[in-house]
Length: 331
Image 1 (cartoon, rainbow, N blue to C red):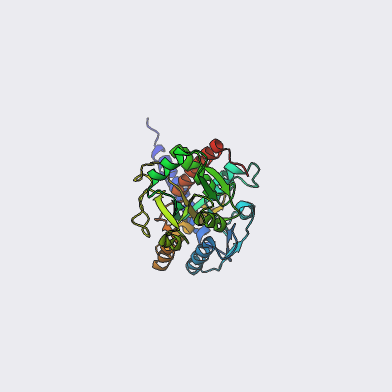
Image 2 (cartoon, helix red, strand yellow):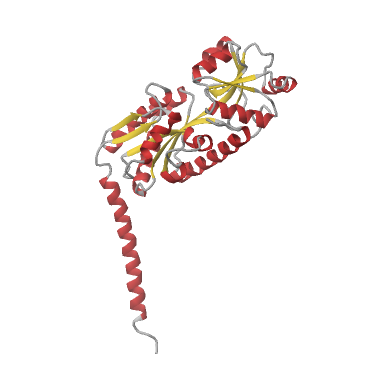
């Protein structure tokens, strides 16, 4: 005879599973409802006053209004932004301490052998904020008016043309090494202590090439002291529509950009991460925020998920690791 209790057992199991799912959902909602219980700290690995700091403070104001709690920007500069990242890696995983990061978070594991944190293990992606496409700039007196002409000059005189960087392990250094690998040129690397002296060296003709974003470059381009040969992204830069992409200039695959993002400590409740992602994306859609980012040479993020930011971060880390190994980049 059939077991008359089987339907009842099935019904009981179904109700149990449904109740468990409901409790899990309620738990996530409870986590979000209880957060934030106090000020949210947004940690930066750079000093106050620069472009990264300005963007973080603007975003912090929007988040504070949405969350109903102060968002305090906490600058912890030094050691290639590792001090700020290490601070967040040791913070409680409750969503009250966040890292406003740049591309150095992806590059540093390939350069520094003994970091006080593990990028993949200690952080969970929250939201991608913006990217600042890089472009190839050369001194205005160099007899080249496009990327292919400059590559031809460099190949004709291996080792005589130079590229400036903001430091031996900076992103412009990695960008220059990547340019060499993609174009088959032999350029001499000249490191400087920061972006300003590096750019000034190209303007003065002490070095020949600089790869960086358009921020602060417009005056040099208008005066003819610098030439912009190509943008290292998939689309042309809105503020310089006449400058071709590197692919249009004959060098596909050279995609370089500085970027901003927000990370949380691993273990932060998923509901808190999801809420943060939602609020950051809302802030990026604000006309004031968008206008400021575009004015600073940045492309705002487009409502991406934490998972999409995580996939992007992994791609960046893989790319930096490959270039650092092939170019033997060390601190």
